Length: 311
Image (tube, rainbow, N blue to C red; front, top):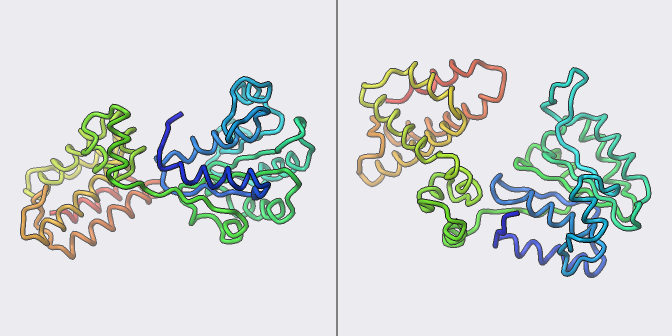
């Protein structure tokens, strides 16, 4: 489990509430992917269920810890995407799952302590599921804790958000993030952090996956298109074939760098002929296209339309 120094303040606050018997019935862990929300969640759950916890930290040796490690702890349930009747994974969390969860939480703890449930990603609940969860949030059973995890908390209904105590995971300072990446042995940590827009967890993962080379490839493609040397359909095909959403992230970054360069009367990394206003528009369009790739529209047409506007 990754040790992330920017968790320290959140951890101390939660443990202070636990020590004075003031734990909420529902916590929402929110913030960008890559900041270790799920590591924090597991650390918290293990400590709450442990029979010999010290300072909120699980011992790892007691019966409760052993059951949790085996995935068979009777007082813990984890809810995520389920399977449809045909065995295909769902793309959302549905009402039947929430009803089963609520029934489970109404039962007494077998260890005489906490009953804990996690919903991850909570922002994947459909409207009916979110409505069903409201009753559990409004009428919690004693010694129950509901932990919601969301990378996009704005997708949750306000009625859900308002009934949860929120832990907001935010980007650490550049210095803190860089120091952590360096300690983790990430090669070219500064470039990785820049590619991830200051998100250290994302930077680490992308560095391990070779995303920095992909970022340079995106910039070469955009420079070729701007110079009239590239074939748009060939670029579309390659981007769709390998991490298209990530490539669009890097493309939007390139447009932002172009705009900053033009503001300083310099040549940008892709030598685009677009002016600053057009680059700002293209940046927004690239991010919209990244979101749209998850929808029903044809991905090749979405990318073709975007790249046709780059010059």
